[in-house]
Length: 100
Image (tube, rainbow, N blue to C red; front, side):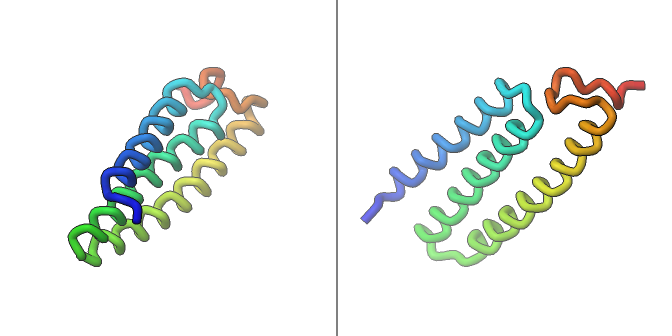
């Protein structure tokens, strides 16, 4: 059986990979994927501690996080597609279309 410590370490690793991806990626789609990793790490933590303490509320909150991640992906990709049509690039540092 997998110990709680191992699962929390996996979650911490996912979170650190997500933070690294957000800080180092130039591609907007890569940044969105890194944000998904961060949300999955938080969801895994909720499920692990829900299983440890026997509360169902945390698992329900994990399902809410999964739904939020799906909505974030849809809205983020729509924004990236809209910016690609106007700026002709998906690199985050070249997107200055919204500046006033």
